[in-house]
Image (cartoon, rainbow, N blue to C red):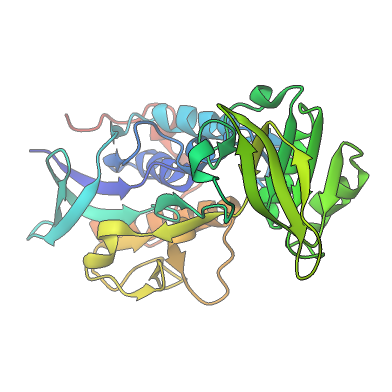
Length: 336
């Protein structure tokens, strides 16, 4: 069995960039991803959502950013294992043995980039919402063209709900955003666009209390928070922007120091409390942490420098510029 220099648990944007950087700097690398495809949240949760806060892209749909990251990673030929979950890890003389849903892997170092963990959506607190899941009620949003010419209700008041409302409004006949408060918890620029988009109708402070229809959804019932009479709003689709309940699953049993559903790391190294194990991205926690893709990319640079020195102490904990690396043009092969 081949022993890899670093095994990356999680094939989302941060994990993909981690594999790229590891291979770029001469390490053999493997990605193990529990989903059947790479891309993580970008593909699984919001493929059509526009992303504005990644350097070099004025605006890019999540699925396109994922595709670019996958293409960048594939150029350096990491070994990729899909639809495979890491169940437990065991320290060995050479590093770690990983036991997964599909088999066993050997590695000298581990980099955990599992994001928020498993994607468990917060359910809509509305009567009959469960009955219409997949037939009008959506937690995982389909292609935006599915909403063309339809009456759509989006529920929530954070970035996810506001971004979805803005994106859906470009296709739907009408979009209604329902939020139980008057204030939104979204980026100022997104709120400016929200106010300037005439096809979006705001219902605040309101809550959705029921959905109705026969074979498919036809309407929702909303009411003012506190006192007030319920009203019926025509709707062909309801999109939840209430977010997801993070769960680390088996990761929480690996002996890592945790803070809630995040792994505590040293910000100067991204190292966990376990020797030879690092964590980056949304799963990593330290004072002042900002959960952005761009932050995760920066953390990868720190972690890969540390892993490189850990594997070869003659390296001095920094990374040479890519323009000075011969392997950037001719990557070395991974073990079989």
